[in-house]
Every structure is written in structure tokens, then in C-alpha cells.
Amino acid sequence: MSDIKRNLIPLTNGVPFVIADCIGLFYATKDGKFLPIAIQLIPTEKTSIFTPFDAEYDWMLAKMFYRATESCVHEVINVTLWKPPSNRFDLQEKLA
Image (cartoon, rainbow, N blue to C red):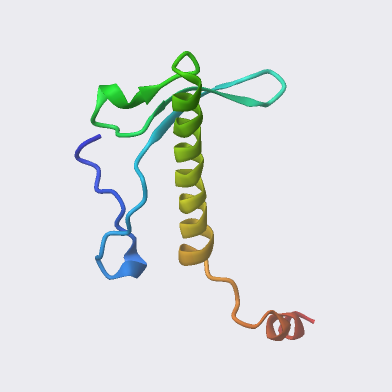
């Protein structure tokens, strides 16, 4: 994975957009829930892997870190890359 160019978004004119780079491993239950199995905060370091068997606060902080990363990625996709119409009322009038 070291050859993957990360954090380069076309709309930033080549300036890297910094988002934490972590990986989550999940188990999908039969009822559709995802259970976290492991979270790796820094992909190049084996010491940054956390599981539910680690200390309570280490695991909690790893989950918080992962959730913050996912929310940043969500914002980039839904706000930066996908631009809604500037005036929804004009769009509604055109569609009517």
C-alpha cells in the first residue's frame, strides 16, 4: 500500500488534503451489524494495531480516531467533491 498516492484531491490544486490514514477491520453479523475487530492507526506500523482486547481506553481512543477519520472522508466526498445546486429553489422551478 505504500505506492498508493493518498490525500490528493483534484479540487485542492495539488496541495495535499490531510486526513488521518487509518484502517478498520470489521465483522458483519447476520443481522447486518458491523463489529470492529481491529483498527490500525498508522498503516506502516504494526505497533499501531488496536483490538477490543487492548486496554479499555486505548481501544476507545482508537475507535474515536477511526470515527473522526471516517467523518472527515464523508465530508470530503459529500461537501468538496459533490457540489449541490447553489440555489435549490431555481432548480425546483426549472424541474416544475
